[in-house]
Amino acid sequence: MSLARKGSRRIVVDQVAFRWAVRRRPTYCQANGWTPLRFVVHRADRPGSVLVVSLPYAHPGNWLGLPSTTVRPVLVALAVRRALAAGWQPTRPGPPFTLTFRDHDDVESCGGITRGGGRRADPPARSGYPASGSTDSERVCGGS
Image 1 (tube, rainbow, N blue to C red):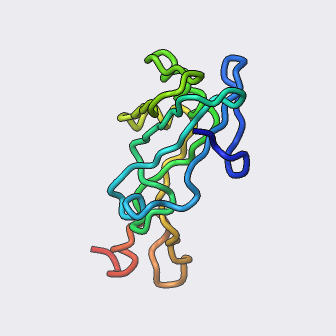
Image 2 (image 1 turned 60 degrees about the vertical axis):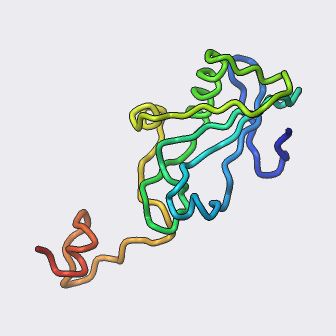
């Protein structure tokens, strides 16, 4: 299986070129927060087995505003190195190799920024509303 060039990014890890991508739009299950944020990686010059990486966050486009993270190249490089150490052979054809990050600290140490997902934004601060940093229920209900 091979990723299309359009929509995927190139990264070089230990002098080997790979391509990686995150789904732009969440699947229905990702949008509801039932399945985690995932990205895929394959070797750029000789595609073989695909690496599927699951993160302990929801997709940024989830509908519920669940916490998400930004997938950055440093996180992709870490995932590739861990998968190679765990036995992933990117030049051999075969089933997808799955790598799961279970710890938030691993992702955040790679520069991933935890933030609320979804398309909802906090309402702008207006007179009568508490300062930023308060919860939504405090804004709507006037604090408790």
